[in-house]
Amino acid sequence: MIAFVFPGQGSQKVGMGRELAERFPECEEAFAQADAALEVPLSSLCFEGPADQLVLTEHTQPAVMAVSVAALRALTARGVSAQWLAGHSLGEYTAYVAAGTLSFGDALRTVRNRGRYMQEAVPLGQGAMAVIMGLDEPTVIQACIEAADGQVVSPANLNAPGQIVVSGEAAAVQRTGVRAKELGARRVITLDVSAPFHCAMMRPAQDRLAQDFRSLVVSDPAVPVVANVDAQPKRGAAEAISCLIDQVTAPVRWEEVVGRLASEGVDTYVEVGFGNVLKGLIRKIDRGARIFSVSDPDGVEAAVGALAS
Image (cartoon, rainbow, N blue to C red; front, side, top):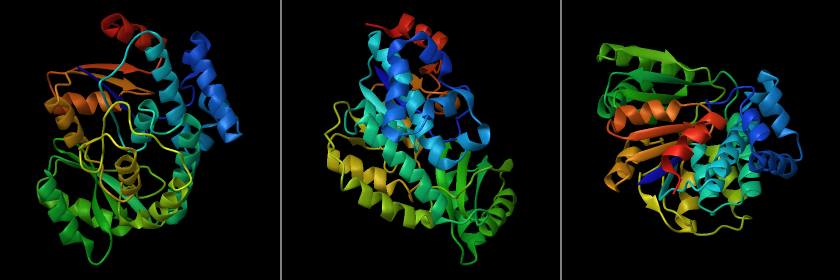
């Protein structure tokens, strides 16, 4: 059984999607639709940069989505389909495009706003995120509680066994890293991010995003999507949108998402979009799975050769 999984912010790089657009007409069309939906040359930003603009959150999020949708269309045009869908953080929006819950244009505009709202919620430098390696969730929570000192800090991404990202106020995140090492963490790595995603500091962004969703026409997913917030499959539009809104301040429970997919019989994962971050995480969670990364024509051909029905 196949699941398509879609990457989130952090996988971006100048040049992404260019070979797809040059090789496959349906990919070229996807980028043209993205440019038209946003009324900006998003494709040029993906293909040519500059990098300092691509990394701005409000640009990164629609850019990553556009590449994923282009790769998705290349797969589906060649007979590869999935019985389950999921996405990591931003990637969950792409999953709902694939499921038909959100239109491509609406989703692009929504994630552009999402990125803008997230950036505006916390002034640059006041928030931080760090990866804690080698501790389980209860111990990371303990480190956060003991280091908070009245400030915000909490788990933000439960990515894989022994890999948990914390997010919050910069000083609290730094203290949590120190406490995590005292509790046995192998490493603590501060991330180069523009905002503290998936924590209570994002509440203003969540409230603004909820208002945006009220104006959108949505449909029930044609394929179930396993949500980040609770690792449960969503089959109705209302619960899908509720989970996307909650996701802004809630942790991404990726280890549980992959575990749920495996429990449903998924044995093959196709990472649809630029990079292979999810491939690495899935290998740590479901060691027996087949995993394909599809971000360029070679990736498309490899997946199609193995999976096309």
